Image 1 (cartoon, rainbow, N blue to C red):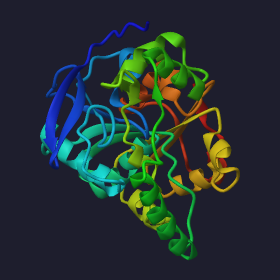
Image 2: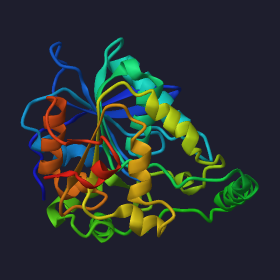
Image 3: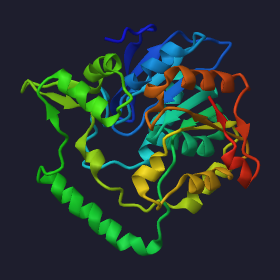
Image 4: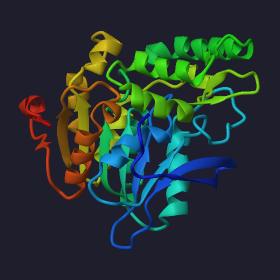
Length: 319
């Protein structure tokens, strides 16, 4: 099994009437801001362990389990609203870094949260790293009636017990699931992640530490015009990191492309773009050393290529 080099400690803190679980590495340092790591959809904060181990320098690191994930208390809800993640992060920073700017890294859904938070609270972010936090395909107002209907239908299915996450007979089954989802994930890392990603219940089976209500569609349309206004309000330097595998091409089949994403990123005033070779969407698992190097170089004010014009989108620094 993978042997962690830097051992985390767990804390439970009160955040908006929830008992929030937070993993911490290192100790607070008055000379440097905290580094906050936020995970993606159907993931947990332990997912950052490989990147934390690969960092060259010691750092005070804060990594929460989002509401509905990991060891954070489940809210009494049957669906989730994206703005809640921004508010949870705001309360979390008030707890750990009151009145202080932090460096923020987000993966996937966490990257989307980080981008929207940085534009909404620009004074709270020193530097921002977005790992494959692409956002969603553009929507049209005409889709609203069907979207609301789908949301209500899925809520009913959830309450009928029809929206569930698969349970596993043993922790080895969880590890195999992780490797099936990400074929680059080595067995030793999968074995280490599995007991953090799932937990054995009284029935003896291992259940994913993610609330099945996360699978219910958002009732609200994704408004690109609103997102771009938030991006324009970001004051911190931003590093957007992509994997060499084109996840958008796999997910959306032309409905939302990397070119579309790059176009949106032009709304960010101080942007760098980088790519990690031989990696998929879980690039922090696939190439943690390269991701850690990119993060540390960027936090020192180095690395990556400015995105200055449309042609620049194709000229990314590879590592």
